[in-house]
Image (tube, rainbow, N blue to C red):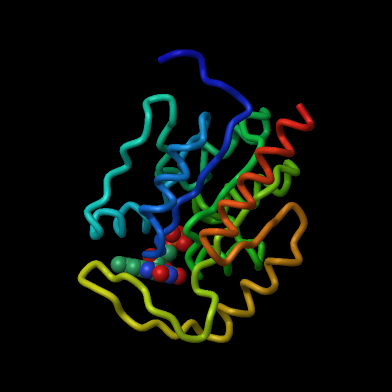
Amino acid sequence: MSKLHTPRWAWVLTGSGHFFVESFEMIRSLEHCDVFVSKAAEEVLRMYKLKLDFPPNMRILRDKTASAIPVGEFYHGVYHSVVVAPASSNSVAKFVYGISDSLASNVYAQAGKCRVPSIVFACDTSPEMLTRAPHGMVEVFPRRIDLENTERLKSFDYTTVVESLEDLSAAIEARREALTRDG
Ligand SMILES: Cc1cc2nc3c(=O)[nH]c(=O)nc-3n(C[C@H](O)[C@H](O)[C@H](O)COP(=O)(O)O)c2cc1C
């Protein structure tokens, strides 16, 4: 494989059933990106019959170590930005409470400690919504704690919370422009 281009994007897939297909398209549009996959995301992707087929220069990093070994690269300037999309209620809660006991929560926590900005696409964001389950659409009623956690995360440093695909796309574009502007 050719030399890894750094700094690059870090994209985190969590086990939320929303917007995998759209997230995959956005990942492919980023030239230099690694994909961090939570254990739940691996299972959920299989249920939706989706494959992690990204260009060979994009590394797939799975949750296989207790200490989240791949995340150590944040301390060596390998990543300029994090995108967590889709973000499960579970991972959003861990981000808010400062828990780092999984690959996804470690990416967010260590990015913060390295002052690398994160864009988090929280999906359980309205009291009543429809979502695509593996065998069709189902109703979901996110709990008050889920909605409150999303709101709390919005006040965190180095964090942009988005709640729609359009806003996710716009936040990525804004970050791309900032990177170009700042060199
Ligand atoms: C088919 C399927 C769809 C799911 N969709 C969601 C979802 O939309 N939002 C959510 O918060 N959790 C969803 N979950 C549950 C998460 O996968 C579960 O909370 C998991 O522990 C999240 O772990 P992670 O945050 O480390 O990825 C789903 C689970 C399954 C099996």
